[in-house]
Length: 317
Image (cartoon, rainbow, N blue to C red; front, side):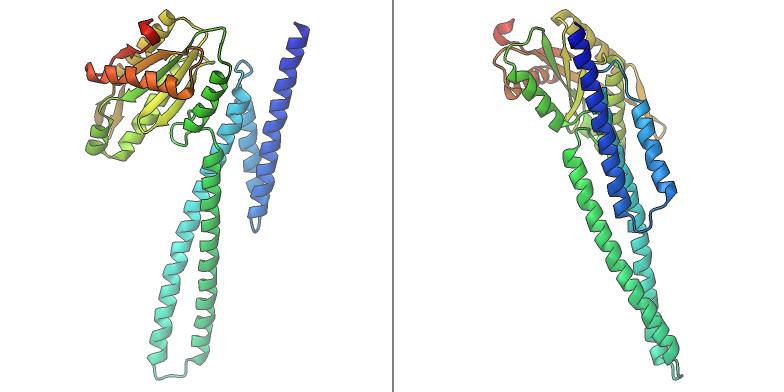
């Protein structure tokens, strides 16, 4: 027992060192990207790092890993903000460059000796053009870094739950074990009439609903349960170490929680419901077979009127 406890402490220490190393590397990379870094930028970055570490839950086995992913995702959002600010500056530079070019053309037609003024405007125009080119280069570089962060992150950028990439990795680990000494249930959720909401209220309302659903799922699940955004308006939940009766109880609680809460958007009350399909992991399952059964069960719920649960098990067990 003591060896197991020491191993757990070692793993936690190793994970924390990995988190701090990641933060250090991103800080150095951030300083290198700044032409004139200052202490305020570094202080802000370190404060974000402190907040991330403080939020780690000692009781959650994958809390450190989730914190690493959340910090990476937050850093991506900071880059997005920087990109937007730089894009705005770039647009201003382009407008000024056009104004200066117009003034230079007008001065050339005046029958006065304005050679010195024209020369100065030419110098300004040249400098502005160089700055625009440099800004475009930085923007292109930032876009590339954002895409790289998105590829490497295991969190969905909108809802902050795990993404499909993380789901694939997690299910591969489970299925590679063949036999597991406990029950594992997979739930596939789909927001009812989501396209109608998007068509009626717009995609911003749709995004708010996705965030709303993700928050509701977090509230209704245990610490060890995992939520993934599978794609579009679909989510997948993995419940482990509980029996079928408990799985149904949790699933019903999710249905009730979502349909009993209303989302207010631009003064309108949006009533959201979901359909759910569940299945149980069997020895020999692959991620594909497991998801396919859950999807089949979800199809039953949709066809039966939505806002309900159906299951798909092997041999009807």
